[in-house]
Image (cartoon, rainbow, N blue to C red; front, top):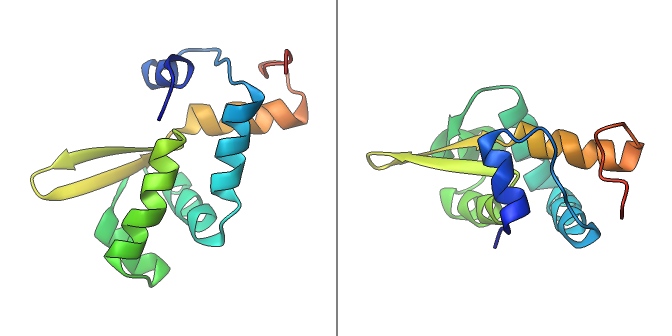
Length: 112
């Protein structure tokens, strides 16, 4: 699943070390139109429930859960549970770092 480099993003580490394999997994997840739309929706809010996201996307909750798992596995989405409801939020730090890595911005990991 996630290695310790990705886990550090959850503690707001200022610099993430992502190797090319980890970045490829993230960009592969974003290569699906539904998952890209999930990320876009989460970028517009603090968090949303799975039901809210599925409704916005006009897909079943089961299909949303399938796509959500891929985004969680690569670290782009974080999930918290409150009662029976699961809320998703975007790992903005990780997304920004991945985008910086292909743009050559100063905080990008240039070793790969």
